Length: 435
Ligand code: GLY
Ligand code: MN
Ligand code: MN
Image (cartoon, rainbow, N blue to C red; front, side):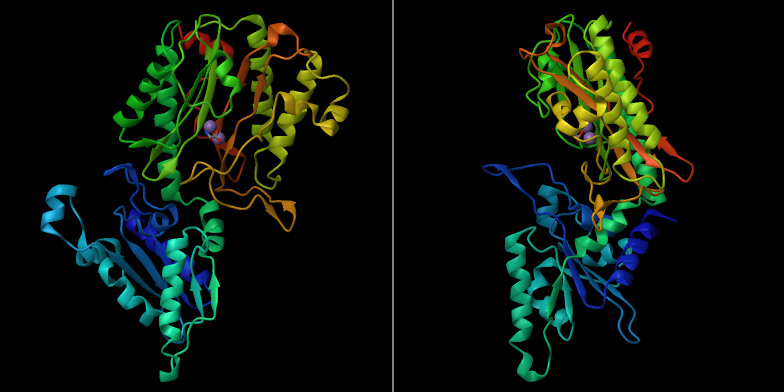
């Protein structure tokens, strides 16, 4: 299958899940950063998943099959514009976009308000991402009202608005071959970036210098942006879960935690490694590090088809809590510490999330109140950690140690596949790489 055929297949799949009606799926707007300077443009994930079309100011309309009519796929996009193309770059324009991306029809985006009410006539349902963008919600309501204003001439207006995200989230949760191909490549690039960052780390360097090594590697391999703001956290900064200042100097004897991954062709990768700034773990750093590594391995062992979403988290927790007790960080039995949640002083987040076009990707974690079963084609992160802030009841030699180890995992028919295996995580491997 070509890439275009994958997008076509997804549109068909969505149309087959609709109970008639019309889906109206806009891409993301361009956003101003300051005065007239824009943020780098990023399309909407749902829109891109269905089209492969990267330009802003575009809307996909899907008219579900009804009676003898098969489903119809229509794109609205920017017109060709010689003057604007000189300033801002190439635009497909409707005719070429229709041909290249396989739509049935394509029109200039300027005709959206004029054409949409006609497309909604005599349709029962409008599929829209209700609440995502209130300005867009008002436009959709305006089109429905425009149809309603015509009812004396015999047309009927849609009487139901349904959220297409509910259908698409389930589709996006299971990655197809085209998606997995991109995700593997994104994971490889990010793994290379982490290896380079480890080699570049030395006492006296600044966190942002190491961040630059990551960005350099992403860009060098054609990944236009990080999938999220990189966390480069030396020493105590590693205990701030969303630390992104990345402006401190690295000290000999500290650990460095890096949580960074590139976005490639719309797909995220998400890796965390923690390693010693001077290339050798101290005894206490090694104790905590190897505890987190054992927790991660226990979680990865549970990441397999048929197991519940929560099984990897529970496996990691059991290992971590036993370790916290052994190190004197928590008191009591594993069961009592799990029950009291005293472990949350050192491990306060969950062990992973779905990964895909969005770093925290779409898809329900529970169904009918139960953690859902893992299935082949699902991709998730496994990322236990341990963060020890200074406190009276915590032995001082543990203070300010923060460790997280995160890999991207694909569930397969026979177990799992670690997409980010290209960056070492065993103590001796890390120490060797850093020499
Ligand atoms: N980097 C975001 C996360 O690990 O969830
Ligand atoms: Mn993550
Ligand atoms: Mn991460």
